[in-house]
Image (cartoon, rainbow, N blue to C red; front, side, top):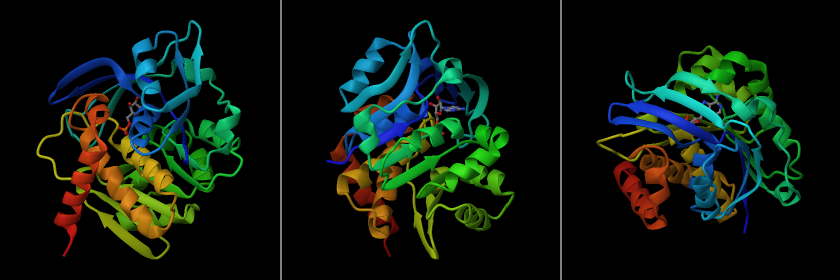
Length: 301
Ligand code: AMP
C-alpha cells in the first residue's frame, strides 16, 4: 500500500464566517490534507506543534491511520496560530493574524520510513521548508505543491523554485494571478506551467477547478452546495484527497489524475459544510462515492 507523505502547518485556527465563529479550533494545511488523504491511504505527517497542542487532537489524528512520528512537539513552544475571516467574500480569507510560534525554528526531519514515500504533498508552509522536506525523499514519484498569497508576497523566488521541482502545482485563481502578473486565468496557468510543473491546477472555489497538462485541459465542476459554513481547509483537503486517491489507485496517468481531481473537489465540498475539521472528519468513503457520481451526472453531456 502506498503512503502519502505530507508536510505543512498543523495549527489552531480562530475563524469568523457569516455562519459564526470558532476559537483555537484544529486546523492547518497538513492537518486538513492528512485527514482527507487518510480516507484513501496511510499518511506520514511532517510538522511541528507546541506543548499547548491538545492531546485529543493527537489521538484523533493517530486514530485515522496518520503516522505522527514526524510531528515534532516542542517543549514550552507555542503551536502555529492563524486568525482570519470570510465576512466580505466566502471565497477569500482575510488574515488578521499569523503567529508562527514553533514554525519559526522548525527544521523538518524525516524518520527513515518516510524517506521511501513515493507520493508527496508539500502543503502550505514556507517554501524553503517544503524544499528541505522534498530533498530528504529518496525517490518521489508524484509531488504536489500548494502555496498561498503570503509566500508569493514574501518569498516569491522560493515559490517559483519549488514549483520547478514538482509534478503538480495547485493554486487558487487569485494566487495564480498574483504569482504571474497575468489577469487572464488561462494565461496565468500557462505561465505557471512554464515554471516547470507538468500539471497545473487552478482552483476557482464554488466554480470548480481547471487542470492543464501540456496542451490538454480538464475542467472539473465543484460539488453543488447551497450553504457554505466555513471554507477553511477546502484547498488543503482537495489536494490531500487528490494525493490519497493517486496513492491508493497507484496510477498517475492523466485519466486517473482527472478522477483524483473530482475526488478532491468532492472531499473539499464536505470540509466547507461545518467549522474546522468537523465535517471532513465525519465524511465516509460511501458519501465520497455518492458525491462523485452526482458530479459525473451533472457534468456529462
Ligand atoms: P486553505 O485550504 O487555504 O483554506 O487553508 C487553511 C489553513 O491554512 C488553515 O487551517 C491555517 O491554519 C493554514 N494557514 C494559514 N496561513 C498559513 C501560513 N502562512 N502557512 C501555513 N499555513 C497557514
